[in-house]
Length: 309
Ligand SMILES: Cc1cc2nc3c(=O)[nH]c(=O)nc-3n(C[C@H](O)[C@H](O)[C@H](O)COP(=O)(O)OP(=O)(O)OC[C@H]3O[C@@H](n4cnc5c(N)ncnc54)[C@H](O)[C@@H]3O)c2cc1C
Image 1 (cartoon, rainbow, N blue to C red):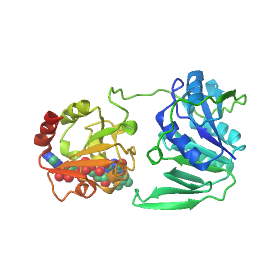
Image 2: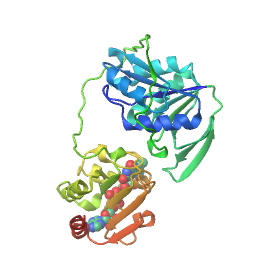
Image 3: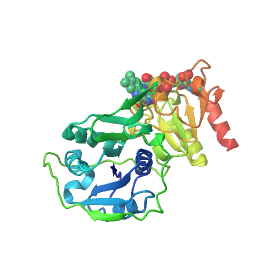
Image 4: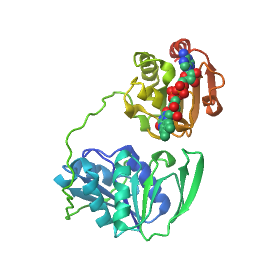
């Protein structure tokens, strides 16, 4: 039995979610091979070879995989994947984009966003915005799984010495092309990897007021997140959204400021180790999941809190 893990990368380095996905592969058991598909991605392949527990790295370095378009990558993964019992991808935007196509090409059912491996064919995954956990047994010969990074502790990024092998086949569907991208630049830690997250909701009032959260976050070394209401109102860009339709985070500390705690928001943060809520409404549902709560006006409390840090 061998498990194929798709590496999330930017051609030069491996993204953190890959390490959590390798941890899920270890829980399944068997040899772990990592696929790095990209162009000019040798540095990422070399980094993948260092990951603890990986025995082989397959490198598909070709212009067809620049920007990892799902149409091309899915053909590649389905082709290589036939030799494996399990194909795992991180449940990132990229993984969610190509993995279901792989499952369809292989005529198997995908299991999405697993949070636990019970055995080689049985997995746990959250359903109903994280309000129930489904235990799913897959009878397909090849199991296609996406992995929720927060469910698995990352393996070490170094310490391994996997063999690196080039993949000769090129699968170019020729049906899509990459036009441009707009990246939100930030010096703060990446939201899904941050140890501390400070999030603001509709209670922040406007985008300008988020300054008080940025200032607190910078003192704490934290990433800044937001509720969908804050995103929809245009206070902040939507890559900051935490929740069912945004990012799933599970930091050591999550500070929810002016957020009511709708189930769709809780779906993205309720596995955080310690939750602090700041809200002027003592009945706000966020207090039901908060370990520590401050009832009061956030415009008084956040600056006071910052002074104490
Ligand atoms: C299909 C679907 C998917 C969704 N996905 C997401 C998702 O991914 N993420 C997400 O967040 N939401 C999501 N939502 C939206 C969700 O249902 C809520 O509407 C949203 O989370 C509410 O955001 P909020 O808590 O910021 O706003 P509100 O619910 O309006 O809460 C604002 C809070 O701020 C407090 N407040 C106001 N002023 C102050 C002040 N001065 N000091 C202190 N507190 C103050 C209020 O007491 C209130 O509790 C989704 C909804 C649907 C239907």
